Image 1 (cartoon, rainbow, N blue to C red):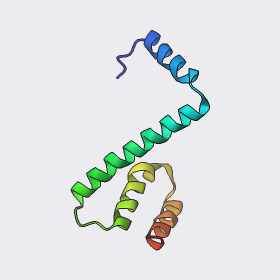
Image 2: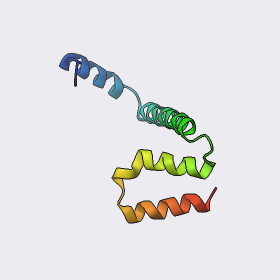
Image 3: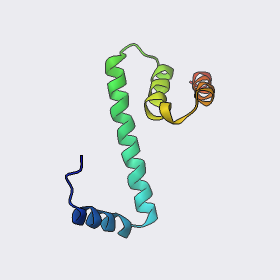
Image 4: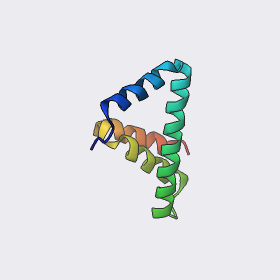
Length: 84
């Protein structure tokens, strides 16, 4: 669904591109951190007894599960378990 007019999309794009690369990077990092906080809160609600390692694994899977092949995913999960 897209309810934004092409003119507004272009205006928004122009505003974003008018910012420095540093500002855009900071914005992106802030959005990612906010998304992680929301997912972590959801995971803690659904898994109240989860360990920090469990939460990191679930956060990783929520964000990257479908983007990484199974072998690499298992290596990353093993590394997450090894470094609490």
